[in-house]
Amino acid sequence: MATSPTSDQLLVIIDPVARQTDGESVRIAKDVLSAGAAAKLCLPEGPEEFARALRRRGSRRPVVVGDDRALVRAVTLLHQEREPAGCALSVVPVGDSALAESLGVPGGTVAAARAVLDGAERRLDLLVDDSGGVVLGALGIPPAPVRPAAAEPVPVAAGRPWYRSLVRTLATRPVRLSAVPSPGATRLRVEVDGETVVDLDQPVQAVSVTPGPDGVASVEVRPLSVGAAATPLLASGRTVTVTGEAFRYRADAAVTGPVRRRTWRVAQGAWGLTLPADA
Image 1: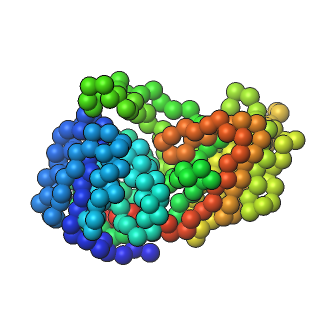
Image 2: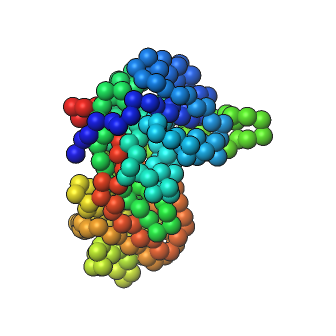
């Protein structure tokens, strides 16, 4: 369901990575947004200032100018405040943006900025894990291979190299992390809504989970194959629990782990993203 944005006053938070890597796109985004709305610009120098600016947004509609990591960071902060359901977030992608584009955000700077001004809020599902993490697009076990980084990290300020150069982690649309085989099989128990899809006695090559429509997650398990490829095991449900050998997983743009147990639940319509009105 799409609704019109509730505020013409914008808080434009420009991620420092975007400022360092593509100043021209940042300038274009600022010009378009400032010409079309009452925009307050915020230039945080690190994650703490980023979080502080978002908390102090007041009635202004937050707009993140940055890459996929900045988008995930903003949604995570709103979730920690228990605010994503009541706050329409907007994003102008600068940098790696496969996740944002898979969600419907235009890839071009001008088109994305115009969508912020003229678009509508779309309610989206969210995967929330038992450690407080969120997944907007998809997660994969083990982490899918990534491409080499395009550039070395550039510190925002002396002594504060708080970020690393980013890699493009999601190469296809829609963003669904493929079940990519690991060098060795892993023994995991995968449960969906309490029902076991695969148990510890069946080695698996990979697991992928994607939040789908209507509050249901799609789960794909690829068992270890000998000879002919094994048929993937498919399931869907609102809660997914993975236990077993210590494993790492990729959630959107970040790798987490190792952990021995993690549960994800689908939060239906838990956050709002401003998208083009005709999306």
